[in-house]
Image (cartoon, rainbow, N blue to C red):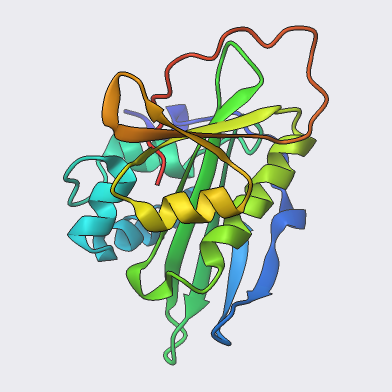
Length: 204
């Protein structure tokens, strides 16, 4: 394929979402929207997760991201699909991604499916909560009225985090292994939002 054919339509890069955040343990991260050139960084992040963390994120065994998934994760439009990453730099000034949070708007309704993943050594310090709060605010500004996701029932830390952020949780009536999480963003709803489809975007 000719590289010139590899084009995608994007909104203006949301630089206002770039921020420096201090966490509960004294460490700090930079939050920013993902860029297409972050493919290597994102691949390294998911490969660095423990097998358990990758399973909880994707609901299946995943060693690394395929080329197609990696492109879908990094070549986004910043409107219907927004992804935020958290990064740090080591003593050698090498960049490391330590978290990923994103939502993808459905085609038939102003509802988006979300997912969050945090590196094993960065869990439990408020990073996941911060990312969820930023996603909610960004979704509200984009006219998305609700965020939905699916979480494995064994993922108690994530369920506790979501409950603490105000998400409604209910066991999937068709699969007891899954818990459906949803929250209103506070955006003004259109006249009709339709009936939400089954969530296909795996939540953390």
